[in-house]
Image (cartoon, rainbow, N blue to C red; front, side, top):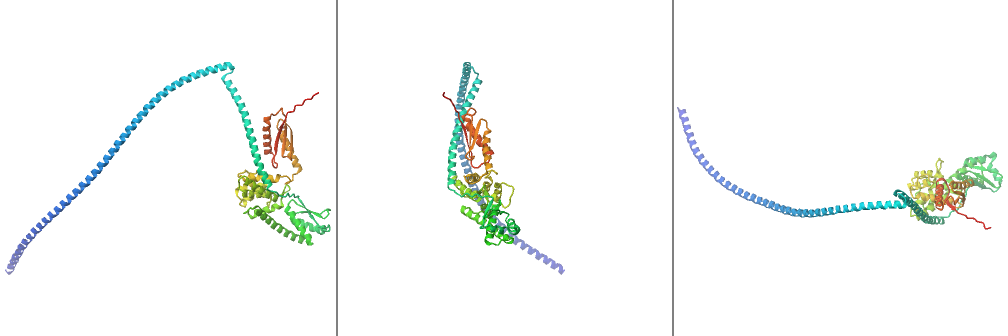
Length: 509
């Protein structure tokens, strides 16, 4: 019972509590709703204000864009109107020009019609005139044309021959004058002694008793000397002289100096001979190098390879047709420098090429090559410039000339070798060359006699007056000169003179 009473009491207390709590909550709810409604009104008003502002802003932007587009449209319309006006003006001008062209075309057609009519009239008239001329002359038009062409050909040949003769004469006068001036100046400014060497050297001794000492017991000394030097030693009855014979002048010089030292010293036996010859060889080698250096210094040539300097020194002991090779090379070098300076070329390069042009005549070995080709190969081996190498190789026309130095070296080599007294020529070869000159000219028809004069430097040709006229004499002279140039080898130049004369002989009785 007590328990039930307690439960009822609890239930009553809970109900009272719930009532009061519900009343309080309802009051709070109403207050919250009232506050929320007030806040909502405030937010709504603020949003409305913001919406109005954004609307005004958007309206303003839209108006600006509309104004801009309207302005651009207006500008475009103005441009289109301007272009339309320009196009209209151009269309008017085109129409105007078209009308003018149409009028000109109509006028041209009319003129062409007139020209065709006049052309037809002229053709008719020309035909009539040609027919009258054919009747008068007794020739057809084709025959008259042929005769006219032939007469024009003859006239043109005569004029051309006269014109060619004038040009050739003028060129000869100018070229000969200038060439003579350059050559004479070159020769006048260079002078050199003429050295004529033979294949033997005569060694003079004080008395004939020295000959026996040189021969030695059973000839052992002379055999040792010949074996050491490579020179044939001729001891004969010639008083106070011993002959040294060899084609190599260097060996002859070594033998001469060795003999001189042996005779001066007085000790002549095989061991001493070998010692002296060895020492003299070394002296000659040193002298060759010194000669090469001195030559290059005298000529002002620098930068030569030492081996080329040694070969230049060896030229002192070589000769060509009796002319000392070193003197010939120095003379050619100076001539080349002078001629190159006269022609506006580099004189130093020309002098270098002139000095080295006969390099192939002094090789250490003896290859089967022309000396010009061998010299070119040696120059290339020792790093000489291509134009120098070409000038060396082409100075006897073994290779093609590719630079202006080559003809200068060729000409100056001929000047140095062909001047009077420079070289000896074998009599048989000289006579053969003169006979070949005369026979070559006699092979032409109309030639009666030929004479080679001035040591083969001029060829005079007598022709028959009834077989060759005056015009053909010049042609014959050119042909003979060209044939001599292409078929013969000769120093300098050959002058060809063709003589034609008519003689009338009468006798008074």
